[in-house]
Amino acid sequence: MTQIEKRVSLVDLEQRTVEGQREMAAARAEVRVGHLLKKAFRVTGLSQKTLAERLGVTEGRVSQVLNADGALRVATAARYLRAMGYLLELEAEPADDGAPSLKAKRARDRRHKELFAFVQSEDTGATSNAVLITESDSIAAVEMAKMVPVVDASVFGNVRNANIGGTHYSLTKSPLSGRSVS
Amino acid sequence: MDRLLLVDGRVHEITCAVLADGITSPVVDLLEQLDAKSWPAPGITVFPDEYQVKMKSRFLAQAEHLAEFGDLETPYNRLEEGIWEFKIETLRVSFFDTPGDGTFEPKFGTDHTQWDGKTKAILPEDFDEFIRVGHYFPKTGEWATQEDIDRSIEVRAEDLSHDTN
Image (cartoon, rainbow over all chains, first blue to last red; front, side, top):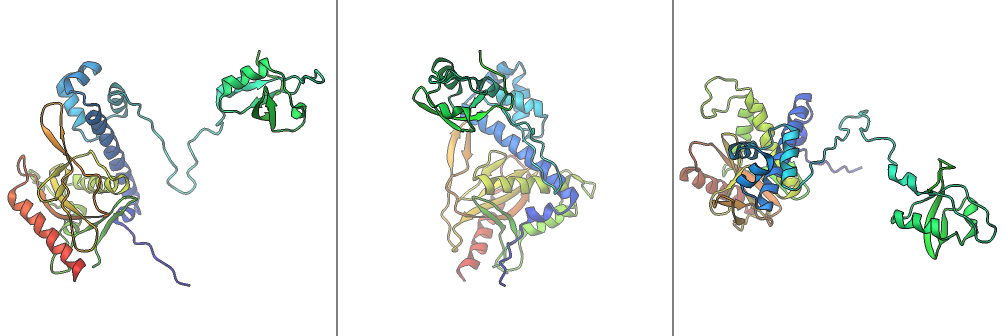
């Protein structure tokens, strides 16, 4: 079998030692932060004076931070970016085998709880189990569910879809059965 | 011609230019000196200079950012005739772009007038696929010397000659 060997770059080689991994991670973070700060400053067209006024620091300090090329505290970078109209967001991805993800396991948006609703059949008057309306326009969907009874009575089974007030929604049974929108 | 691959990015491949002899690569020599913490940096009198480990990583991270994203705001300068330089503390490393066929078209980026009225050259967005780092030199003043600029241009010519032979 013919195998095509990928050329190994020096950046890859550097990361074959623990020290190299560490130094490259640090250098990347500095370059990235320095890039973001300088780009934000350039594209917004702010002056050092204006930025200094927004931050309540001296122009000298602004110059120092912008020329630090990213070698600064995370909070400082976040503060400067926010003063220029940007939010700094951080993520940490697993880099080693076996390193668990740092992402929260509960990915459900808390605000979606408010989408659990009881719906009533026009035909039988029966009330459904709580259903979760997963339509993207969630507020409108809740309002619709509250105001317009379900037309499609099959919502009482294990259905995933329903027609409410002429609009198609995806529905699932609520794991928090009994919760409702009042 | 087998050039040392620094980084194989989504936007650019960055390698070390090779001189006319087909063997010598100035930036490979530089990297060896940084590994040995022995590059004669301006103002440094005690060796090994432990800080040079960080300088090497910093250089690679800047190159990687350019290769991956196609832009860079961290320190660089436009020199002459389409030659640019990475700035890493007191170290300067020149670079140029080429489509890989032995030719080059000098790219000068755009001029951005800063808040203080000074002009800064912004990296062009249309660099060719291949970027090569050529000559290195220490910062000795506000500007690169003409000698170092000329040598950077010569290194480009020597390197590109391998692609046409």
